[in-house]
Length: 336
Image (cartoon, rainbow, N blue to C red):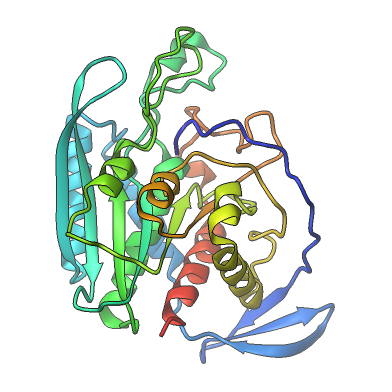
């Protein structure tokens, strides 16, 4: 996840009703107030496998930091593309050389996997797969210039999307789904650099794709971005740009999460405006997009492991992965 513009303090607090859930083998969810079950909700999506998503995160981390321009980045990209192909999707790799913040030339690699590419109605699901070359939120100056493993900030969203792709292989949706893994999202100017360098250094891969799509005249009904969706006790507040440009989609996703019993994760509170991969897609393509992202009332606006070397597998919770993954799957499987 990029050095998102400073988190704007929550504006309007909307208290949500906590729901408890019991899922049975018939894929139904029962919501409850206190101990009385009522308003049975029947899932239409397959059961999201959090163990599988977790294993995909572990695999990404096994390559090391996925910093663009490194061999570890190449190797992980090769694995991601091959995995998506194995799931039966049509994979297109969009590669381009860009001049980045220090004048260096870097090859970006957007990996795009299409399920049922013949379908006209489409939804895009996306995350970034690169990791940050700086740990600029570390207090130890010597540790700040070292790349981070980025388990939550990058790998968690990718892990959830890989599991969704695996499920799509055997359980078709009624619409087409495009899973997009964007590159070079998280290499913005570090906050320890005092000389500001003007330019769009964040969200480079998604910005490039929004200006030069992988196929001509690409259209999608909407997009869902998954960023930092793996940490225990995550709180997915309503992100500002999502509310401004896709408020109905926010309502759909959060109400779906409530029906599934995940209100403790998808909280009914407004968060800040976050510069993330959905922004260039909204700006350049006019596709309504929602950012599902873990926001906190902290000095940075994010969890304490953000942009530090503590962003490792220890922070990843299968319960959070399940909440994010099952909610997104339910939304897309209900589309007609």
